Image (tube, rainbow, N blue to C red):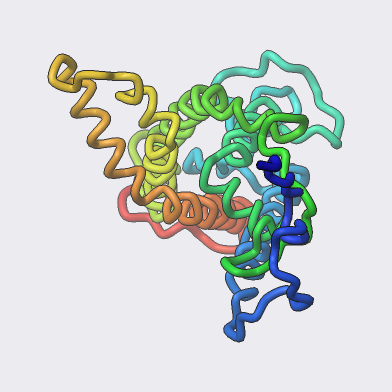
Length: 272
């Protein structure tokens, strides 16, 4: 009996059907990857511009600080915006003021299991949709550079927890009136909604689910961790929705603070 023939990877392998068309689908299969690409590109462009402009990111009257500049630890930060001091000196214009945490947040999002699926399919077209031939002849998996770095997701998760705590502090510190003391306005509502959703997205992470109960063999022996695992599991079912929602709330929060800080609009105050 002869040995089985080796099958090369990809849809062009010798054992695959010879179909010249990329797909026989007649529906608009390309719409989902197109919208995904546009959505991701919109956030990347907006966040990049806002992270480098260094204007309208702090409202001194109400202590509103945009998440894209938190924490602001440089002498280049405007007075009052440095909640944790300024241990770093002046920064050149090509370095964002939030440079300390932005790489970790970017790493957390890029290595996120959902975002991998999103940009693998929409940007790399691997595959773009079911029954649509991808343009790649072979697939090596996440075992070589650069994709082997995807395995660092659990470490970025720990960094994201710290950043979420910082964002929470910023949201609490923003309860500040124009004349001092307690104050509450529309900006506070936006900051609170944003930080709550950021916590929900972070805790719905697959790494968080694995940490809370992924290695347990007997849930009955660990009732507390089993309860945590159950709660995280419920959040995990909404991980995709939270991934997109938090991109939107980050932009909305920053855009609102930019409008107030620049004097374009006035903050709607409920208590001042």
